[in-house]
Amino acid sequence: MRRRASLITTTFLLLLFSGSQLHAAPKYLFKIASLAPAGSVWIEQFDNFAKEVAEMTGGEVGFRVYPGGVMGDDQSMYRKMRVGQLHGGGFTMTGIATVVPDFRVLSIPFFFESYAEVDAVTTGLIPAFKERFHEKGLEFIAMTEVGFIYAMSTKPIATVADLKNSKNWSPSGDPISEAYFSVLDISPVQLSIPDVLTSLQSGLVETVYNSLYGSIILQWFTKARYIADVPYGYAYGVFALDAAMFAKLPATHRQAIETAAQTHFPVLLEKTRESNSDSRRVLATRGAEFLKIDKGTLDILREKSELAVQTLMPGSFSKAIYDQLIALRQQFRDKTTAEPAN
Image (cartoon, rainbow, N blue to C red; front, side):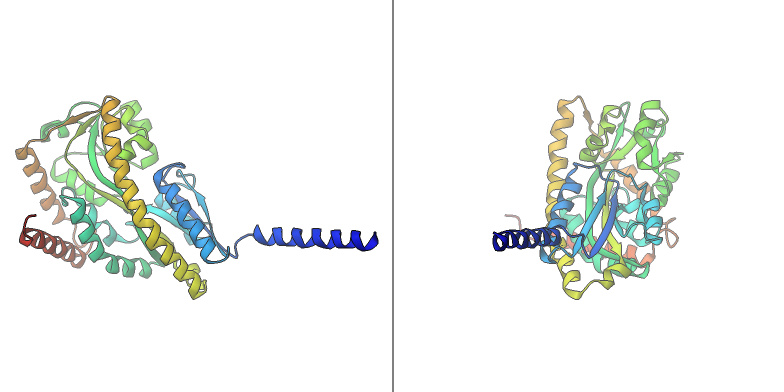
């Protein structure tokens, strides 16, 4: 009986020890924050990425995610990284560009005409982005995407005059939108993203800018149901980690993060675009009205964008990154034009 009791006790202790090992805290824990809401496609796909990293590293690398802006806006997230309270984040291009100015160059209004163009240009710029981020103590892991954004308003807007007569929102700390509105002779209301919905509800702003999916996730569509049916610009972001903490990982673990990112973030890109496509139908069924914009108005808006760019260099982004942007877009357009039609 004693031997049997001893065997049972030993077995129990082994199982207990094994269980504690299985559920042990990660050796390397990255605390990550994002403005993306819990349950959104961005957070869901990040969870898949984190699970694969955990599997590939034997549970030694883990991520604790703080979604929905609970850690504040992008600038607050970055400040928390500087003091070690966070170790990374999913940043919007507007927020992190205060740290890495060249990263904002893709957000020039009316610059891109298709996602194929976006993909070609972005791929060409990523090496430069990685270098710029590393100079600021950040490890660039992957691009993220919000998608093409649209002007959404509480009343119909179809002309430049309509736009001028509306109370426009501008993201706080975004010199590109400031410059663009300036050449349009518009004085926008600057707000952080978490403050936009209440400002729509109060009437402080009447025209905002978001992707179709983003307008649903953030509930902006409940007030801004008129949508100018031409992309105003392209919105994106980045998943970045603290470079010093990333460098402390064993080489195999760093590779695991990079490999998992190459698998899951392209899937996130596809899902984001699918969500935006589906959102067009959802918005239409919920009473949104898509307004056609005539070519004359569109030409004016594009001309104003080119004019605004000249005021942004070199303060808001470098001429070198802008020249590279233009060259990559031209390469894509030349290649597309040269390809025979099917």
